[in-house]
Image 1 (cartoon, rainbow, N blue to C red):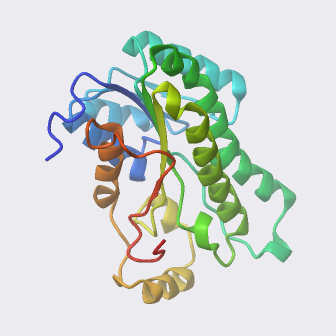
Image 2 (spheres, one colour; image 1 turned 90 degrees about the horizontal axis):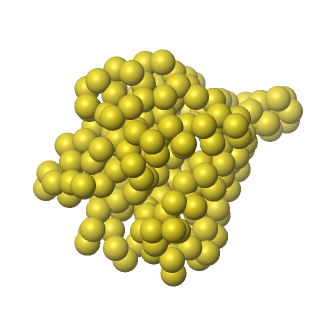
Length: 246
């Protein structure tokens, strides 16, 4: 269904070494997009090879200078940036009463501040062309919270609020900004969470199971495509096994 949906379009996908980011990269490539893939994990080169990406970059996206350099390199490789997908992140677990300041700061830096830096860096080109899509991967925990995950939920709630606010600012200029808030997905990110948490979570879900990355990626293709994504402005789409029903 998505073959050719992104033909002639360019995109940056972050977090593309594994998990949801790698799946989005694959689906974007199958839909015809030209890609630059970014991750702090050097294995992003494997995804780049598999998708025929124009380029891949290894970068720390919490570093402002590194983000600006990465976007400049991506613009050189692609000619322009039509779509930004921010699908990178970290996930750790701790009760708030025992959480270190360092854990809190690291999570906010990786899962929220880096999204701000990336969005800000791609906007000048998109606004100048009056054309662009930004798709931020958040989490349903940013809507409902999670035990032992207050830092992660707070960061993802920030991503959702950033997405809505930016959408209000730039939609009139042709830049559409939306979020995807997956539920628990079978990824390396979730693999690090305790089995007790995962078992309890599965029992909560109306669908009774976690999703797969290939069940999330088509939502990103929809939001990046035209006419499919043309009316989505500041929305948070939720492939979440029924965990949140707005």
